[in-house]
Image 1 (cartoon, rainbow, N blue to C red):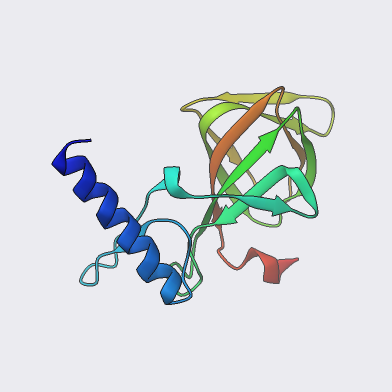
Image 2 (cartoon, one colour):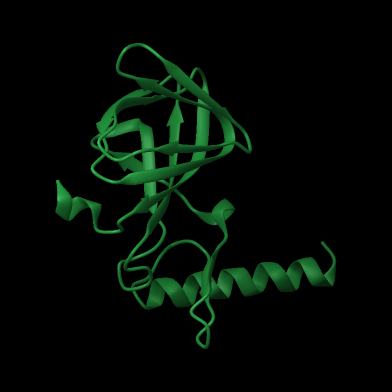
Length: 149
């Protein structure tokens, strides 16, 4: 490594330590105090098993304090996972890597590949799935979707 790579690595490690010490996130997130603009380094986000599953993992990346109107997170599906869900909110999904299939009632499959954006309207009953694996960012409105269920 050269000096600049070592410096960047040290800064990231220090930010992670500071965040953990404050009881914060275990990924790199920076907020400009003047404007409120927030940046999440998505490649540092480590997802966690969801609903007792290891082939379906996610991590919310903003709190209601940070973004009271919109929620966001990272989700991963592996090994051909299929996850049924009914949305009580509007959701955009941005495919970071892999293939994301959205199976709609009635048998239609909407496929998103790396770089694609998918809108799933409120009240959709779907199956998130992948033929292999996928990592995608989700953006939901409203942020407090859990309170609407």
